[in-house]
Image 1 (cartoon, rainbow, N blue to C red):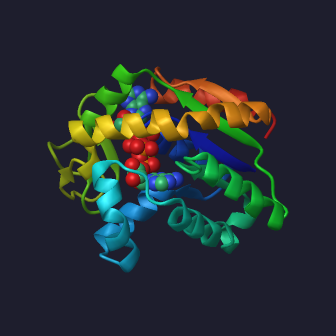
Image 2 (cartoon, rainbow, N blue to C red):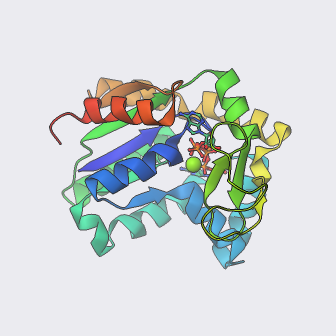
Image 3 (cartoon, helix red, strand yellow):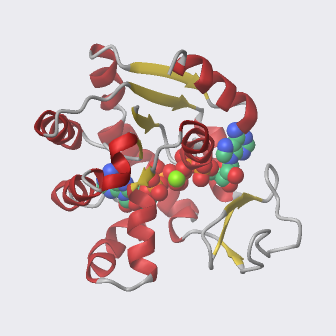
Length: 215
Ligand code: AP5
Ligand code: MG
């Protein structure tokens, strides 16, 4: 099963991706996480994309499309995959269609996690991530057991560079302008399932399971 997770920044895509990939046993492909890993490891790609991600701007399409093309050709993707945060522009969606055709693949469903701007801001501002293993927490909705320490590796919890108010406002504007048109794109392909993302993470996942039905 090949899936796409679509939604505004902080909608809960990463949170739901963990549940989905565990249940359906497919790899989680998050372009945002791939970029952050490269930035942390100071690779050439990381240095190239940091100026975009820190400010909440989109990384140029040709860079993003190339890393997804390489990733979906890896052997673990033979059993299916979940794309989280890709595509994010119409150009990326069209490029993905071309790649899928080339590799004889289809997207089975696009899960659009819908939340209001207020929810987005609360979730992003309260998010804390482990600087060591990358695990994600929320100061109110999913707090770590020890203050500012990761539950899994005791690493220090920090805020993402793009979770500042100014970067977040920009991410929201970029989403509205460049990513929102994908809702109509995938609705017209009859692939879109709209999921109410405003409830608890467990209830959101139940709604996703219902939308995926027999898979
Ligand atoms: P990316 O990492 O994809 O960021 P995003 O889309 O802004 O989304 P987030 O990861 O911030 O949020 P999320 O929806 O995963 O929510 P989460 O589950 O963490 O991209 C980062 C940057 O990389 C982009 O700005 C861009 O620069 C670049 N980039 C990435 N992909 C690109 C592409 N295709 N093209 C070009 N550039 C690209 O949840 C958020 C918080 O809420 C957490 O604290 C969580 O615990 C909490 N939470 C989650 N669900 C719930 C719930 N149901 N109830 C209560 N709290 C919840
Ligand atoms: Mg995410």
